[in-house]
Image (cartoon, rainbow, N blue to C red):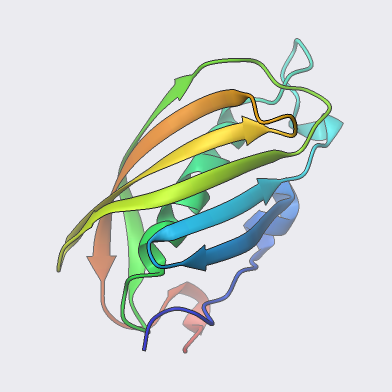
Length: 138
């Protein structure tokens, strides 16, 4: 059984306004809802919020290929910030690149509401068996 029913919601996601829209077959879509509180000093979305969106979007693409009860720990996440974004929701489209027994890699493309590319990321994750944080079980 894969993670088709994995929790799509946690306190951190709610804090940032992240919503897991879809994850299946090595792909995912995660939305970051626009809110002024996520802005940097110039009013565009803060890089930390973009990093969180890329991390979650990439991880859920990988989750879709893992057995139930598996979890991921981010080992490395590299992001290229390509354009500023403000006043619009953002979508990360994640894709699993390789999923091994212990290490998985994936990528994410973050686009604004008009489809313009805002950032790209590449992530490496440790694959772990067992119960996820917080005692959540499948």
